[in-house]
Amino acid sequence: MYLCGMAEEFNPFLLQGYTGGDTFCDRVSELAALKEAMANQRNVSLISLRRLGKTALIRHFFASQRLRIVQEALRQVGRPNGALLKEVAHAMRSLEFNLAFDPLTGLPEFGVSARPGMKQAMALDELFSYLERQRKPVVIALDEFQQVMEYPERNTEAMLREQVQRLRNVQFIFSGSDRRMMQAIFSSGRRPFFQATEPLHLGPIPAPVYVDFIQRHFKAARRRIDNAVVQEGLDWCRCHTYYVQYLFNRLYALGKREVNALDLARTRVSILQERAPEYMTLKRLLSPHQAALLTAIAREGAVAAPTAMEFVVRHRLSALSTVRQALGVLQEKELVHHAEDGYRVTDVFLGHWLAG
Ligand SMILES: Nc1ncnc2c1ncn2[C@@H]1O[C@H](COP(=O)(O)OP(=O)(O)O)[C@@H](O)[C@H]1O
Ligand SMILES: [Mg+2]
Image (cartoon, rainbow, N blue to C red; front, side):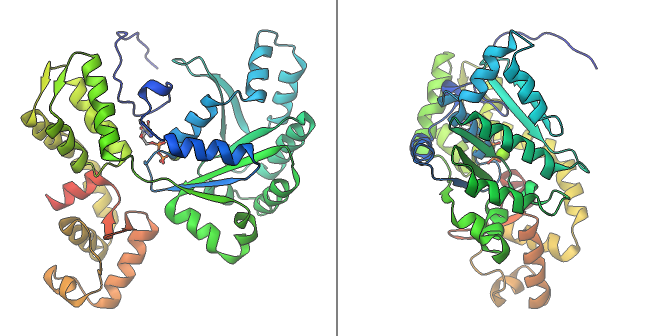
């Protein structure tokens, strides 16, 4: 491992981590909805496409709360023999739980990850019995919840379901991608579990709000960027959070006093060029039918009826049954999703690359 210090100046368009309100755009109503639900003991399922901001919203919520357990653990950190810390350590010993401090905000955070092949159900049990003993209201966010379902121990889900219904002082936020969460909700075995939760669908941040956010950060650094350029960038990213953050991180990183339409055009080209090897690999991993369908959808932008004769003929796709099957696979892999205006390629940059 190599390690070196960096200049202190930082790019306000974050791609990972959470540094608090200033670099976090909007989600005002979603945060309010989350707070209200938690304050009134309603569990929430946070659902969105990938990379739209579920994890960021969860962190934003946690930062907005005086999360008792975390705060208490923090207070005890100075005294490593503190009973609470010991208890936490005990409760969490078989999960990859860790208490870390966000280097920028100084906020404590718990990280949880499942180590494959471990007794997850037992570990979660330990955690829950610890939480129950606390008796204070606690919020647990299970981010990318479907992963819990994939734990090798079959009874993890059953145990979780039981705890969710039993623990009075614990509120849950489940988050997951559109497709997986919907599958979990509608597959009958899991239904009772999720029926008790309130769905919170996260959409894109509205363009005018994002324009203001972007302008504010450029102005703060005494840089100029025309609203028209910002708007064009947002359109190109379809306002999908990760892609917006990435594009404007790059435009900001140019370090120019004035960022214009040509800078945007060049940056767009670079981004797609840089990702080309990755996208080529991805394409090779698909069957020819799947790759052809994905490309056809990318070229059209949105396709209301991928199995319509006209679309199939225009893009020289194969038999209808093959197209239908390929569409199923692409959806399953979350490479395409069904949006309001039809099927779309989920990864915005991949879509541009395929269409180009
Ligand atoms: N409200 C926001 N303001 C600024 N950046 C955000 C916001 N929400 C998400 N991001 C950024 O967008 C990217 C994707 O968000 P993430 O929360 O990881 O999405 P998800 O969990 O839905 O896959 C991350 O780089 C994150 O920092
Ligand atoms: Mg996430």
